[in-house]
Length: 443
Image 1 (cartoon, rainbow, N blue to C red):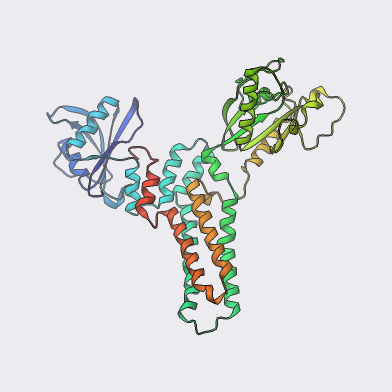
Image 2: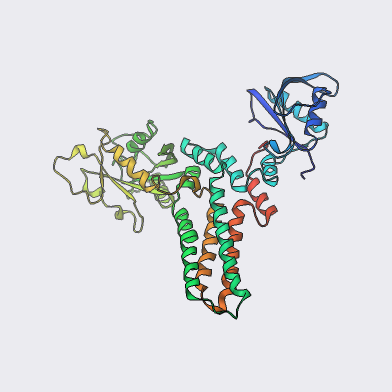
């Protein structure tokens, strides 16, 4: 409830130089005054040095007290930050003291939820707060900042404004059914719907870059034994993670390494060599290799230039789409090869790797030309946009049919509602509960 004053430890668990407790609500300043044994009101946005006392008048800790008044705060209501020492013991005692003085322990994400409910940000910006915290690469962090600044929300708001205008024109036809509506009217409306809504929404949905910046991508390296899969994993990750020998079957399980390709967090998976074997352990390794290939975002098939029997992925897979095929050990071949779509590489001589990484980036969509400020960054956004697009197209298919004009308006209102879910407009409580369940305490 917004009438409660909430409190939480806002810094991560563990020891640190600084620990912060955040209070927000109508009694935040009053609770802080009691903590400090201070009579004079705090001056907004000024830093005050205080000792904070327990019920017996003994010092719990000392540090900085900062007061943010009402609409000038993060939450849109009176907020206090107590910046003391990062001792888990002291922070716990100080936090419990704020509860004793009338605060309630904050729920996950409740500070940011209050910011949304007080109109300080829309729901897409609130989700960007988590994205900023969780960003694993600089590119992801920059994208999260753009979303936090409201770029994505402004794009969605523009779609909703356009829909409002278009529906108003359609409903005007409902109000005057006796008037004959000229075909030009429907033609102009169709052009607006296609150019202002369908085309830009499809462009957003066609790019998966936004989601991959935050959710990451998986790349499976597959191929027969001794073609250089483990060597490729080591070379790409810059770490000597996989054992490399001339003995076939060295890798018998999947081996994962995390690294980054053009700002996208990537989990690179080395797999067991694909071959027929009587060894039960190796058979299980081959099975896991195939499973990894089936679920990966990108499959890299590696072949040995000196061994033609390793060149055909169909030997082991019937329907697998190997988006990238790598011809390794080019240093062992003297005569020119017909590569047939393979990328020539010599891991031993460190040749061709830069070209391979560029192709990997392209396959993962790292060079998508989508507006990075308005990229889809979560499954929730994608679902809402997809639902809205389907409703827009359904309405457009009925446009111009006199007995369907009311259904057209209904579909476009439904599209408006789906877009509203992204910003927190509609069934607000359900949407907020779903989103803020993923937040941490203190944010």
